[in-house]
Image 1 (cartoon, rainbow, N blue to C red):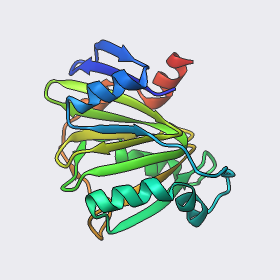
Image 2: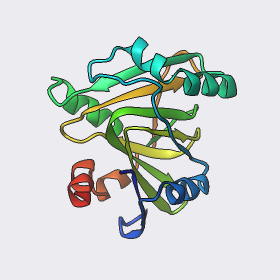
Image 3: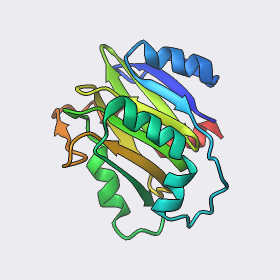
Image 4: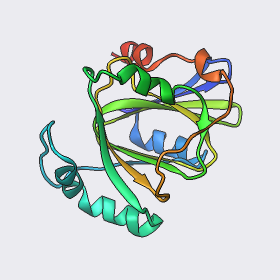
Length: 185
């Protein structure tokens, strides 16, 4: 189940939402789109990029038409990946992008921490969730110490993911993916 936690900048939890409608509404207030998608066909854990994109073809085509994406791909990371710690570390510090960041969770989960105004919105995204983070939004992402997800990524720029790190240490004050998922269980 997707969960949105809203914190102040000192990491004190102010709100918690688990109803999709409430999550969508609260994220919309900070310019973030949040949708639920369903596959048109069953997928196995080992489904290749072509199979995944075919299962979500209508939704992918709609987003491509609406936003002019130049690249769409599928990325996955499993708990046994030898570079998982380094890959996780790349996203744990607050950063922005010149382009908006759009991710759809085909499998697994991860948490986007969105630093908007004087609040941090921590959204646990799971299978079926699409999130679109506007350009310039300060954020970070945590996939946990044993990452296990598959996502469709959308890009309007050929270079793909390019982060501009803010230098802030705010992310170090907040509960990690592992802590939040354990607390939600």
